[in-house]
Amino acid sequence: MLLLNGKKVSEHKREELKKRAKVFKKTYEREPGLAVVIVGDDPASHVYVRNKVKACEEIGIRSLHHHLMADTKEEKVIELITNLNSNKDTDAILLQLPLPSHLHAETILSHINPKKDADGLTIENMGLLFAGRPRVVPCTPKGVMEILKFYEISVSGKNCVVIGRSQIVGRPMAQLLLLNDATVTTAHSKTKNLSTLTNQADIVVVAAGKPNFLGADDFNKNAVVIDVGIHRLASGLCGDVRFSELKSKVKAATPVPGGVGPMTITMLLENTLILAEASAAQG
Ligand code: NAD
Image (tube, rainbow, N blue to C red; front, side, top):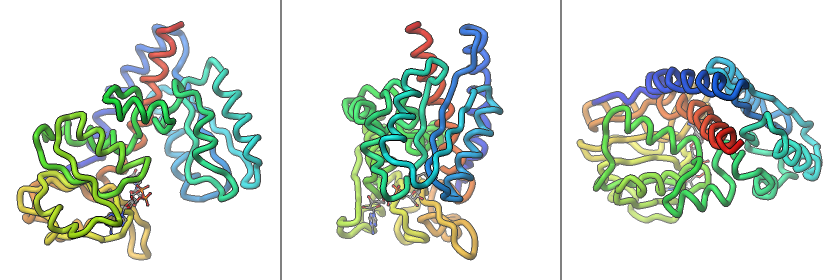
């Protein structure tokens, strides 16, 4: 089985992004800027934000971290987003999810200027992706495509099954595969006979959010298995797939950790650069 090493792909990609950030700085005499907005004290979110800020520093993106208290009113979060929309040093805005329960992610996201939407989650950017003209696309599915590209696994004409239909993973994942000429089936919680579907697939992207959900019996021996799931159990980190069962049972697979996870932040850095370059070129 070929191990699809997301950490390695991520390191390779960051070298490329570092060069791109350098060219940006030389051309426009400033660094690309990413504003990260986090509301509340969710420990996992704070770890993610710290990692994002560190990754930005390493490749030459200026990151601004805005931490709001857990009880901040929706109007205040929107006010901050509106200010960032008009701040010319901010090229991209990331709203760290999940939000405290009194806040509505969709409402707040709708206030982000789509030309500064680092995660590609505004309706305009989703619409562009679904129309086949992507501007910036959600980081995790974008990272999956990058892993496939690195290992020269073409999706054209392949039978692909995406498990999950969330806004941040499943739906954009299916669209990216379609855009690259795959034949795509989206499975979800109401799908019947899932194992029959996955057994027929050339490529399976698993984003069901269920620890150790699928194993060797769910794939054929030529399958490429991409596990997006990530779960912190008492026994350690695991994905949606029982990776240890896959050795010599499938063609290629991503591990957890070290698979899709490391790609997500790297794709955030790339989205920031894409937005910064587009905005700087417009003057
Ligand atoms: P979600 O809970 O929003 O969506 C899960 C999807 O799985 C739903 O669309 C649901 O219909 C589907 N599903 C649930 N049970 C199913 C079943 N029995 N059969 C088929 N489909 C089923 O989750 P999400 O935000 O899309 O995230 C999915 C997983 O990916 C989670 O484990 C999450 O932690 C992980 N994730 C990882 C990264 C990363 O950077 N690696 C980023 C985002 C999400």
